[in-house]
Image 1 (spheres, helix red, strand yellow):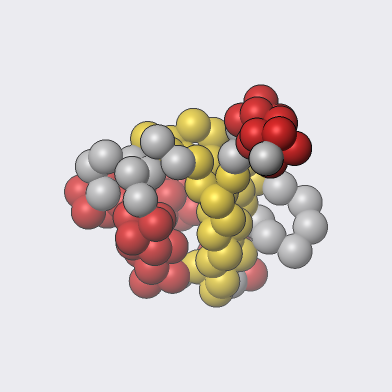
Image 2 (image 1 turned 30 degrees about the vertical axis):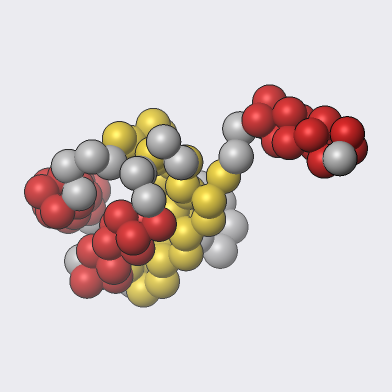
Length: 101
């Protein structure tokens, strides 16, 4: 399945309370699992930089990735940006294919 990376930024007031943040995260995950049962989460990180969180997940198609992003925005993310990722070994295989013509 294709791999996607979801970068989200939350409103400042939604990250000050750990219990509240935990509850919001569980609610978001339940909605994603209900709307997109085929999505498989691989990792979830709190990060430094312009975004607050990074989720790495597998989804069957781009439309499903859009759903995940839309649910994130609907559930309080100030911004959500999705990227499609390719495992490095697959990238190298593609590079070899392109080189060979």
